[in-house]
Image 1 (spheres, chains in turn blue, green):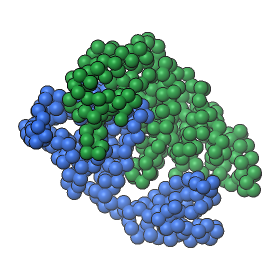
Image 2 (cartoon, helix red, strand yellow):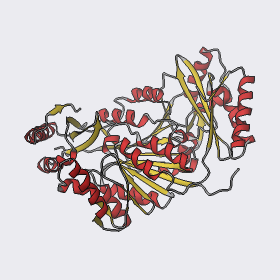
Image 3 (cartoon, chains in turn cyan, brown):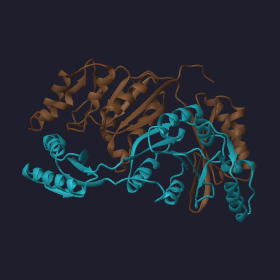
Image 4 (tube, helix red, strand yellow):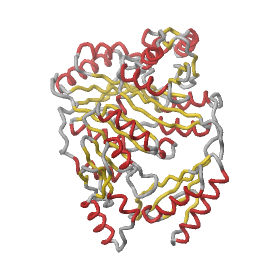
Length: 253
Length: 253
């Protein structure tokens, strides 16, 4: 077990299009996976509509509570892109045109024979005091201010911004996770799982049932910052499942 | 425009597996789509870990704020299934074995030549005062208490529970939505969209850019409870896009 400081994060998804069910969010999963590699735990996600006060309230509720907060969505050039204003309001700062962001957009549009219109210049607006997060995909940069990271809504643009942030954020020991699976109803395994957690302090076991091809199965994810404890717990669960007559698939089914 | 009462909902996803990035949530999109048909607006989503106090705090923050609250996840037979206890704690009631839930589980397992073990009986535990939401898929019912609806984590089981709830919840006028798309950078269209909202009160226009096949495009979703206003706004946007030289795809690209 580790006594290291645990670094935490939250994600705030700004998006009427997610709340309407029209678009399936992809950013939570990709940010979660990326955070895991940085040794940072995603502890909470909120999805709120494109309404300034809702964004401000959510930001203020979570930014004091977690080490890092990521927002996605609402940083484009159109009237429904209000994230920058909401972040500035939450932080009590003004909004400025960032000179480097303006220069990036000027180069980007000039290279494409296009003009930096007033709408496009909106993408250079940042809360006063912010730094830029490079975005090789579309010119418009992400924004970093304090512990807030303002990312795009379009998943592959956010992917590029995460790439630019890789290794930049202080984190702790990454969680070690090991998954095993069995074609067993989880209700048959409940006692074994409970015992597994009890006998391996610091280890958390997640049980994820599924139904496929008309059969019942479950994957069990064993997690800890202590790799040896994960290994010992997996060994115990595997032996226990086999003793109950279930074949175990390492890596999950 | 309609002066009707607007019915609102929030979803609370209980799931370490979503926060770890291991599992892509599917329930938010399916509940959002279902709510839309019931004339209920999804206004907020929170995703919290499998930690009782986090669930209690989130429930208490949202249950007073929205007409309906749906939880997903954490109602199975294993040690990490703590949703029922958290809901009971949030409401300040005890947990009981629901006689009808017990009978359902007895029939379910007896028909499969299996016993109702202590672990399985956990799935009959409900906050005192709750009603059941039928679940044809796996026996274990969902739970309804006050304005809270406690659903499964496995998406097809939640789908069955939503099916059982269809037409049971009071809602308002459904939003009418009409999508059009164009191979246009949204930054070129920003002024047109702003004007479209200004000239059609009660109409909201969402702008959703994308990059495909090396080209930039966007879909525009026009929403209102007033179908005629949606139609008028779509007509105006279509004319405006065509005047700018962009072909419009009805239904979106």
